[in-house]
Image (cartoon, rainbow, N blue to C red; front, side):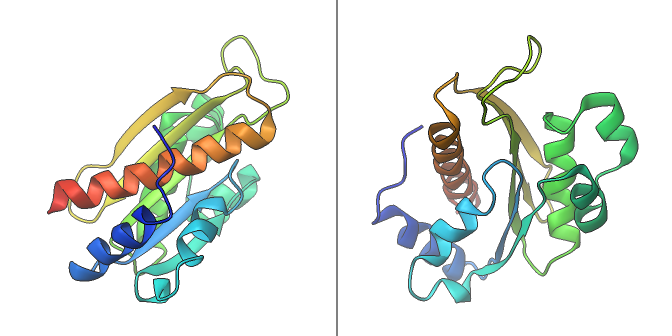
Length: 164
């Protein structure tokens, strides 16, 4: 997916504001880049409720309630962990819509979890949480983080469009 243009993030925020929806982010490999992109827009405080940066497993557990069982069975980079992150962000905020990102920005990775694999989840109050994984490839750390941010913003926009 392409990065939302500068004009698209205000449209995302306006769509959320029109529906009375607050947004929270739960970010690991992006380290707050999604929240930052949202709050770069003047007036975003009407929509952006909070952002969780949960880089360590302990932070995922303590701040969002990701279970040790999930982390042990599936690892930090998994759709299962992303789901628990997004659901936890809903539970631990006043938001109605959350996006979670966890992945391997690089360098490194493994055969089963290569560099560039990123897992996403979107939780929308009253709906089933959706998850997906993307293999962006070994683009380099900065590029993987940037495309992950952009994809997460597109997921938020899609969730708001589907709600319309």
